[in-house]
Image 1 (cartoon, rainbow, N blue to C red):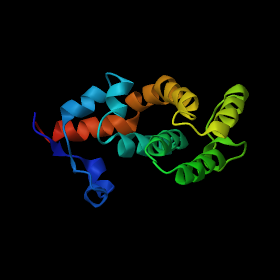
Image 2: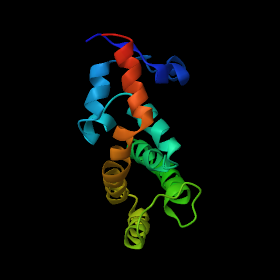
Image 3: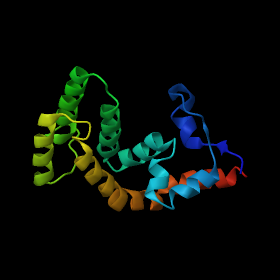
Image 4: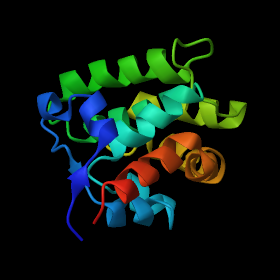
Length: 158
C-alpha cells in the first residue's frame, strides 16, 4: 500500500520537525488494533499528543516522552536537573502539568527520586501508560480526530 499525504502532518508542518509527511492508510488502521501499535509508531508523539490536547490530557504523553529522555541522559548532574524538572512539572501536587496518579504512587515516586536510578520513574510511567491505554486510547479510536484521519487517507486513494 503506498503512503498518502497526511492532512495532519501538513497541518503541523511535519517536515520542519524532521518527520516525513507521509503515512499510509494501513499504518493508521493498525493504530486501532492495539495501543502498542499506536505508541510504537514513528508518528505517535505528534499524532496521539495532538489528540490528547483536544481532551486536555496531553501531559500524559509529555510525561512519558520526558521519562524516555531522562533514561538517555548520561551525566548524573543533568539527570538530577531533569528529575527535578519532571517532579516539579508533572509529579508534585498542583504541578503545571500534573499527571493523574494516586497518593501512594506519588509518595513512591518521591522515595524513588531520592535514589535517582535509571528506573526511578518507571512505576509512574507504567501507571500513566495503562491509564492512556485504558481511558484515552479507546476514545482516540472512536474520535472524530482519528475518523477524519482515516477518511482523508481513504479518499486520497491507495
